[in-house]
Length: 107
Image (cartoon, rainbow, N blue to C red):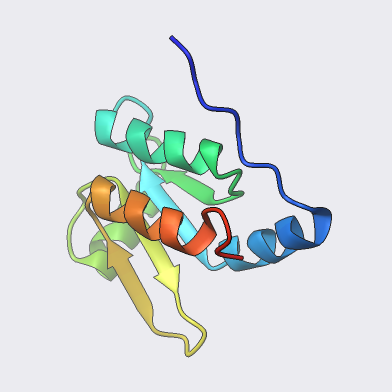
């Protein structure tokens, strides 16, 4: 099986991506195939997104239920500049968002 090599950015562009990713968190668990799709996108785009395993971290599961309203994964928590929080649940939607925000030419 072949995989796409991760995106390579100039150091200053990667620093901007790193800073933007501090406002993101992925709630997931490793054996979930939809989570694996999102993780493949994260790896391809070279994104340092913090991840929380809701199966091994009870507090993460509680955070997800309290904030997003359900414990379905994957879920990307996005904290916007104005402090508002979006909870994005669908893997295809998460992958589109990541590609639009961090794909080639986005940052």
